Length: 582
Image 1 (cartoon, rainbow, N blue to C red):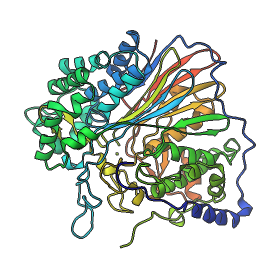
Image 2 (image 1 turned 90 degrees about the horizontal axis):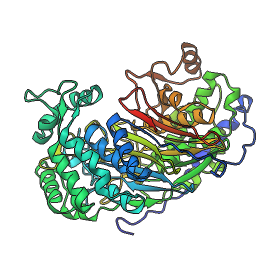
Image 3 (image 1 turned 135 degrees about the horizontal axis):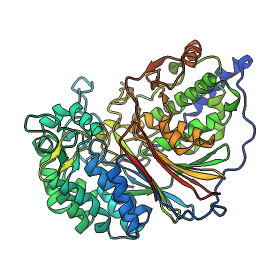
Image 4 (image 1 turned 90 degrees about the vertical axis):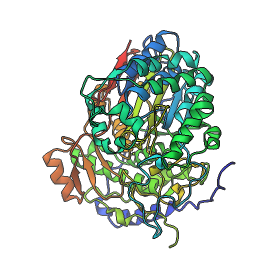
């Protein structure tokens, strides 16, 4: 296989199982309530009634409308995914775009699933220590600001791949709504204005970005001001006419490389020409009879989700009081994120023990350490393997009338990516290189730590927390995902638990979140996520709590009830999105 040779990794995760078994055995007098045997997972669609309806939930009404327009022209869910992605690149540039990448989880009407990996890749000139100074310490902002922070984008390649292999319509048709939005403009809205204000300093250093997103006085445009992007429209038009070659070769590619290198980046024409999406087998599992299908590495989301759900399957959460229930869920998050930090990376470069981490036997060892009366400090779990000596993303969910479905999470990493737009292209560059582990045990922008499995290497894809997911029970299906950096995994975990418990799509997206990611050893929670009584109980158990200053996430959910054929689409009220059923 191309790239760096595989490193064989010993299944050292077993160390955790041994440690946590010992911890649990020592506390047998406070053994947790164990769950009863679970029924077989739901997999069949044969009993489902015809849908007769389609649904789209995305982070912006204009993007949802773009997908609806393509479905109305005879396209399927995969054509609509191209239209929604491209429209979001125009109207939600704070979160995704042609300069970024992501994961498209696809489900065909027959129930089969696959994942299209369009994650960014490190340029060929990237090096392990490229963001460290001479003393081996991280250089401030080097992996987040400017062209040097950008990986080779994958989203444009995904457009052609989806249209050619899975769609019904020509790529040109599916990109038409986004091209129109870029040329004619869209009104400025509060969430985007906030992102521009936050990233204003970076945008001022990029004349092309400042021209689009700042006034002549250097301030964000007023709410309602029309934002037009003619250069981006031209780049989208090149894609529509030439497919991926319209971006990765020719005039656009030359402009991209020239602009990146002028800003201190390291892209080459060969980097762009070599980019390919990869189709991967999703990770699958079950929880209380529900079948879970989610993103495999180089996303950590699906593995961590199954890791946590397998741990929780050993507990009867319904028999706990609300505070203890949340305590056990938090402890499952702690252990799943520890495994993420140590073992996960690009499977084309390192051997990732997915089967072990997602096994029930391993989860039993993890769960044996969970005390219902006491939190386990993260530093008691084996740490990140050091060698010797992103919050802005977007998600959309689509279901078409034939039963095809897409759960797609795409990103340019932080707000407006690196803040650098390449002249003549309209393309905002990602800062996804920050998702690599620049130095073992050194947290990235989301506070996540990682080991050598996620070290920088040429042509390698950085580890992601994106968790596009399908949850199928005997009664129905949920299509779910969210932005939120490391918080994505915990949000999708809570959504899955809530769906299995019978919660509606509208209630799932507005559910208040809480999160624990191993390090830092703290539980973040939104206002209202914990009652005063729960806070008192959790603190007494040793949980370190921190109320967030703002809400997080922008979840998009579509549900389908098999018995009635009813479909729901819900967009997170924290954002500006829209759920359409028609």
